[in-house]
Image (cartoon, rainbow, N blue to C red; front, side, top):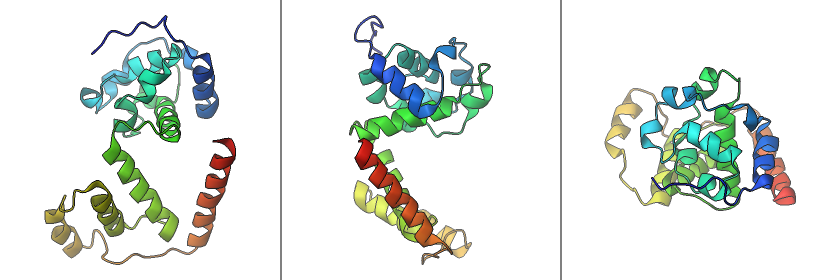
Length: 188
């Protein structure tokens, strides 16, 4: 891991943006490390959660938005639960990921492709259509046969369905997506 000089390139606007969009006060974090100690994925992150929080406090926009950590975060909320300052750390990580996505900074392309496939499924059917989501992800990512061996097992147990099931109100879910896209274009 490279040394980061926190005195260089402090992006005050980025600090404000993260705080405004997440609704969290980053200055409350005093680096106790509880978030990192509880994180089940910390071993896979390039920067542990507590360091991401410190980088955010120091306005290190490029380092945070280009990190793997914000994409690998599972939003399990262990960090949030453990925070003695009651900061919604998982929300902060989500906010950083949303901003990174908006600025087309995607360090983990397969994760973004999975999110896209998931959201497309919800938009189209009003709920997750697992089979379609997996097929779309596999096509988009080029991992054509990923987890193919699991298909017969879960299909025979009724865990996922071969055909999608639309829900009542799927059109309302689609309208939520439309409103969000209009708003994003307006503010983007």
